[in-house]
Amino acid sequence: MILFFVVSGFIMVAVTGDGRFDAGKFMRRRILRVVPLYWAATAVAALAALLLPSVFKTTVFDGEQLILSLFFIPFYNPASHGFHPLYKLGWTLNYEMFFYICFAALAFLGATSRVWVLTIAYVALAIIGMVFRPTDAIPAFYTSFMPLAFVAGAWLGLAYIRGWLSVLRVEVLFLLGLVGVFGLFEGFYWDRGLVEDQSAFVGLLSFAASTVALLVARERQVPYLPTLERLGDASYSIYLVHMFSVAAIAGVLLRMMGTDDPVLIFAAELAAIFGGVFVGYLIYRAIEKPLIGRLRRYA
Amino acid sequence: MNKKLHTIQYLRAIAALMVLASHALLYPWQSRRCFMGVWAGWA
Image (cartoon, rainbow over all chains, first blue to last red; front, side):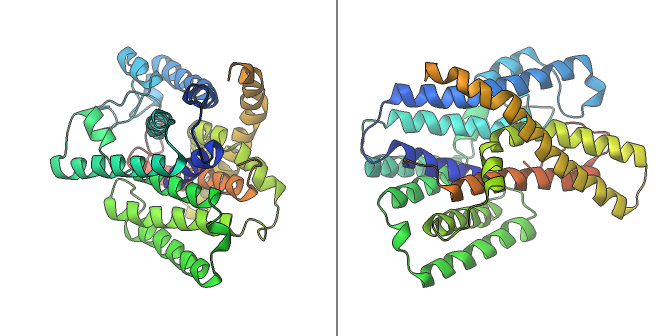
């Protein structure tokens, strides 16, 4: 998730460029890109939870939750014991939307000032969160350290549009690679990948930021891999539908096999991974891409 | 960003694959009955 946020911060700065930009147009484009598929996924989850409640463990249909979820308003979800919308993966989109709004609100500034103001604001929010530890959903959600990942991406985006990344020396790139490896190890292994944990967050953020810096700095040297690029295009669909596809594929296979054999379980996991990618790509081609094409006129 | 950086496209793909793979690998060990929300703790 952290990598998604860093990449998002990078892209927003890179696409809006150095100067001011049209905040209304920016928001329209972001909403048209993010909202339709998320609303569709939320609707499917809500309908399934309503019609087949026994299939779910921590997703319970609730009309108020549905409305809050659709409008990206964080709330405490007693079923999941967290600030999760009805369709749980949407918690990341709540942060995305927060970032877009903040970014658009600073459209009147130049890129450097915008990134500085965002940095100061998000660091201040994170400090407030750490000091006061708010418990109400909205203050608790927005005073998390999570939005700092967008800030890291925004600085990398600024470095990119200024041309700083492409002139990084080999020693610096090597160091970035080391930071990335250590960060991944720290985040996933020592802290078991719990991004709510601050130390794991620092590790995973280090990995994400150094990987973005490293790859973008060496854009010309990195081989062109059309399949991976297409998966990048489909990444939003893959992300949004994987909860359904992974659960369906792994769930059905495990039930059919009815075994505790770790090899067979691993085979089911692999099938869920490949199946999840396939289904996500299919949704991208069949729904997301044509939908974006049709909605482009409103952007 | 006049043209798409292919490295950024790769990173988007890698991010999606990392999330998907983590959830798929965790799924059998969390709960076989659970459909959604098994990843709430992870996510």
